[in-house]
Length: 348
Image 1 (cartoon, rainbow, N blue to C red):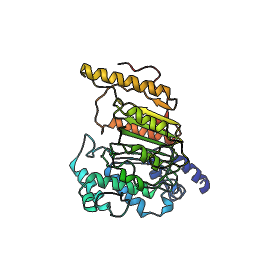
Image 2 (cartoon, one colour):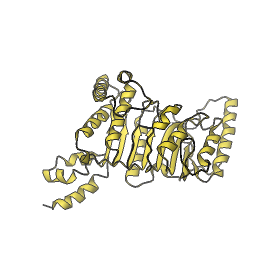
Image 3 (cartoon, rainbow, N blue to C red):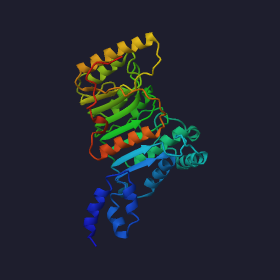
Image 4 (cartoon, one colour):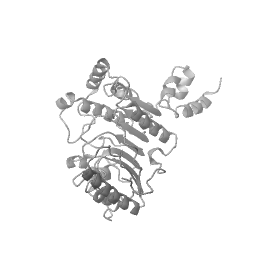
């Protein structure tokens, strides 16, 4: 039998190459392996679906803080058989909803300002966001990479959690970004360097940029998948990101001086069948956006993927998000790979 110290090293590497399945399985091998893997069992873990989210939050809060050593975390609201997938079954939905209700505790991870407890209990999306906040709060001291795929709409941008070591955060899902009152209550995360968001709309009175400046004051890499890439005002907002006021302090209202790369994903190509006027307007906007982006070396403008209609809850999109997270965990570039940057003008 190998000495325990050697098994500890073996378990360290074994628990870093998948979605947490290996770490959980090691618990059942033997008492020695269970002991050797205890510190690494949750090192890399994926949580899928509302029921797992509720149960994992409950589990984390039931164990000693020293055992919550999650470094790489993936959370998705999508799971086979859930109400967010095509093979939805009512029983699974009812079970997960009850688990979310049972988990809810007012006064823990509340947003300021935020809904009243009685309103949260009547809103499944709020209950789900509360459960995710509880998970993030439980691992806030150790997590380094957190990717969250949240199909539920949220009326806020960032979860109300302060992280001690977080370096990379991805939040996929539609959100509201017009509530200025949230910004003074956002905890700052000075270790956060990379941030990815989708469903991003850049417009005149958005609070998105101020919120990012407050939440991630030392950000170096930013990825936006735009929902309005060819509307008026987008270029003006990009200029605010890349050309902030040069002052000695960093506060909401100014953007980041530390930013090195801004990746822009323009979304899918427009569907066929557009009228001539609309098509011409978009073509001109494409030209203007491209000309601006090639003038700024920090911008990486991604190529359009071809137009493809698919549900936001599709298994293909889920696999894409999961693969991107695993690539980052294994030391790859993930979405920060700029090899597909646009190098030639837009083609109408």
